[in-house]
Every structure is written in C-alpha cells, then in structure tokens.
Length: 153
Image (cartoon, rainbow, N blue to C red; front, side):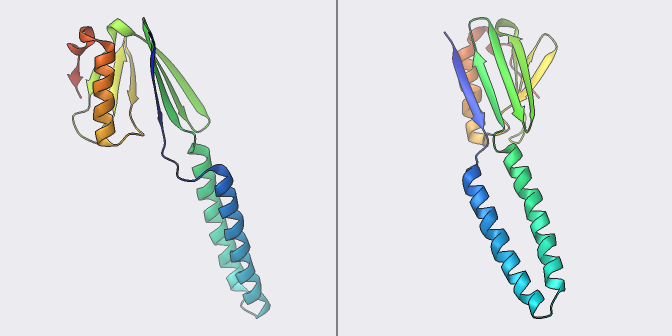
C-alpha cells in the first residue's frame, strides 16, 4: 500500500498570466518613457530601463521556482523523497522501518527525516498548521514502530 504527498509552492499566477502581466508592464513603462524622452526628459528612459531590468530579474526568479516541490512516497519498504528546487532535483531513499522523524522544536523549522545517516528536511512549503498536520499523517502512516524514535530538533 503506497501513500504519497505532494508539497508545492503556493503560486497565485500561472506562467502564461505572468508573461501577459510582464508584457503589459513593459509596454506601459516604455510608452511613458518614450513620451517623456520625446519631450526632452531623456533620463526617464534610463530609469525605465533600470526598472524593467529589476522586474525582469524578479520575474525570472519567480518563474524558475514556481514548480518547486517536495514529493514524498511511502511504500511497503521505503520512504522516497524527491526535492525539486529550481533546476535541481534530489532524490532520497530512506528505509521505512529505520526512519526517524525529527520534530521541529520551533514553528519555523522543518521536519527532519533520518535513516542510515541520511537526513532530509521537508515541509518548507507548508504553513505551521499544515506542517503539524503532515507530521501527524506521516507518523500515522509510518506506524507505531517509528513513533518511538521521534526526537526533537
């Protein structure tokens, strides 16, 4: 019996909507800059270009991390964790019956999973309440054999 969790970043705008918003912003900013440049205030164009460069950097960062996620799959023998951040993907395979849950000591810490010297921190995309709920579900699914191994960070 498999159980899986997909923990993703909360992105309120799709890549297509982001591209439309960027195009509208660039068009409006450049239209104003060109108008004032034509009227003799050439330095407005420089400020507009600096603004659009900063916005471009922010949008690129947003787009790169829009698909960040943590995919956790619990199988009969293994706890498989895939972490995707930007262009990087890491996969971990933890032995189910040897996995120790390291409960966060404070509300802003991540949940630690440790097995055979491998440690993975999960829950970075969850609010404090959702993180507690996930921790309870994970404990329940791992069964009583691992709950005695829970320790605090």
